[in-house]
Amino acid sequence: MADATETRKTPRAKAFDLRRQPGFAAAAWACIIFLYAPIVVLIVFSFNDNRSVVRWTEFSLRWYTEAFANEGIQKATWMSLKVAFVATALATTFATMAALATTRVARFRGQGIVFAIINQPLMIPEIVTAVATLSFFSLIKQATGWQGVGFLMLAHTVFCIPFAFLPIRARLQDMTITLEQAAADLYATPWAAFRRVTLPLMAPGILAGATLAFVVSLDDVIITLMIAGPGETTLPIYILGQIRRGITPEINAVSTLLLGLSLLLVSLTFLLGRKRSRA
Amino acid sequence: MIEISTLTKVFGSGQEAMTALDNVSVTIAENEFFTLLGPSGCGKTTLLRMIAGFELPDTGEIRLDGQPVTHLPPHHRPINTVFQNYALFPHMNVAQNVGFGLEMLGRDRKEIDATVARTLELVRLDHLAGRRIDQLSGGQQQRVALARALAPAPKVLLLDEPLSALDFKLRKEMQSELKRLQLETGITFVFVTHDQEEALTMSDRIAVMSAGKILQIGRPMDIYDRPAARFVADFIGDINFIEGTVTDGGTVATGSGDLAVTAPLPASGTTVTLAIRPEHVMPGAEGPNSLAGTLAERVYFGSGTVLEVDLGATRISCRTGDAPFAEGAPLSVTLPPERLQVLQD
Ligand SMILES: Nc1ncnc2c1ncn2[C@@H]1O[C@H](COP(=O)(O)OP(=O)(O)O)[C@@H](O)[C@H]1O
Ligand SMILES: [Mg+2]
Image (cartoon, rainbow over all chains, first blue to last red; front, side, top):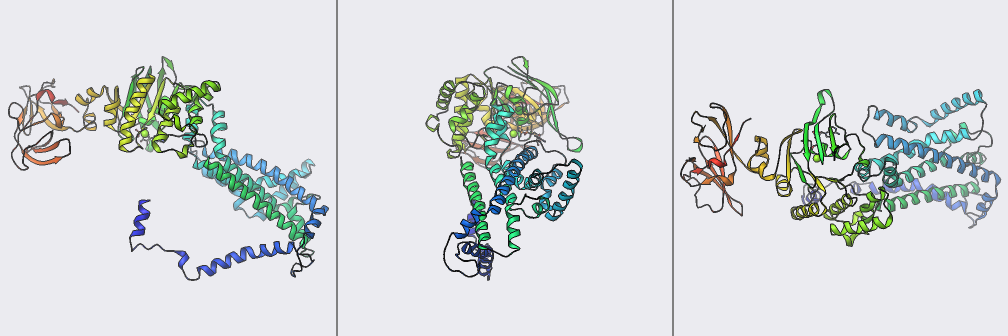
């Protein structure tokens, strides 16, 4: 605090302010427009009462109605949600255990390697993981004769783990281990200390991790494309298939809904997390 | 009550090995306000954590009321801790924090509520029972930590530098508050501090530690007046050291003159260190054990004055009330024989 005041008072120490550099405003606006203009266009034309996605005629909810009535979309949505729920539950559980194991114990040899292993899917190109998983699963399928959506759920679980792991680990690192020791000092068994102190305090991290995992699973194309068997079409795969035959406002409507769901989840997590960390 | 015998703890190994506790033995009595005093890094926290059960000794044993507890996990020891950074549960309010221990002990709701109310009253926080932890000042958090540790009525309360984060005035206030709580509850307090004044004013007994060893255990007066080692004398209060050699005549020859001492002396020819507190040095007086010198410096500090007297071979500081002496003028000092400590090390 004192330092900051000092810097402000000293005339020589006029801090470098990026916002005052020439061209900053233009660059910032360009970024915002490139990021959001396509999304705005997508949303606007999903409400267009016309088959065209480039010429506006009048407002209508027609494409939403059609999307809801479309059996292909229904099935794909259901499949996406099913896979995302299972993958999120499993990935979050594993990530929580991994985060506890890497922060709630004395430093151990090879901790860095464990960290790298957990985060591996973030660093390997997704297409490589996809091909690898495909051939691995083919091997298993051939050897055992097993089939089914379980394979897709498993693949999603795996790439969701690092996304769930990072926020949980960050939260745990911010929490001093003294709190658990204080609980033990006050006669809490290890399980009671976990349930009454560790878990409630890490809950915002778990929530953030789960949301991230859910959104990432919902959104995945490459791995799903490789792994998904017949009848395991998720929403992104369905959209991809439709777009090959040209963009329709119906796809705009579905995409808008998907965007809305992601936004809702992220804001919910943010709000809940803020409330929990204040409590 | 607490018997600690020959505890040793080494952290790390090989080149980085660090002896945090070196053959520490001490017995702490029931109802005692016992203080571990020493500079930072001397092993106070390690010893406290061992009593609480967070650290295992390499060798040695801890007994509580005759029962060995060395390997008992923390939640099975009737011992509570006031942590240095308080470690209050941020997701619980004041009353929930204070009631946590009782809840874990499986007491019923009614008893918990009554005890929490009584304990909050004891630390004068009854009006804040429903507050969130982040709505409290540092001093209030300190009291909650204290109440939380007191509520389950432990046999022993461990306090790790609980006052170091408070400002001077609040610290003074909490010192007498802690003393009062200890007397009222009758719980054995093991208190850790690096502040010698705090230790002297609060403790029944003090263990002075340095580099993982206990150098001296005694009442504050014993430690202050009869330090067993040069480190103890130096760490506690201000003190003058004068090097000398024991003479055939039973005095100590120093560079500034021969000094008589009442304390027993080792054999003639041994080098010893004499130690005397500044407030025991008498300025301006003549007589036996009087040394001639010059007043080098006068420092006024409010309730008195410190005189730095140059004795040629050494310098001696002397604390006095009024000081009608001028800097640079000749000034002799008298070192009363019964006040001179003899240290050998
Ligand atoms: N977990 C640990 N790992 C390694 N060294 C430690 C650990 N805990 C304490 N030490 C070392 O042991 C010594 C004593 O530490 P501590 O008991 O905290 O001292 P104090 O509380 O008196 O300041 C210090 O040198 C410290 O660095
Ligand atoms: Mg310490």
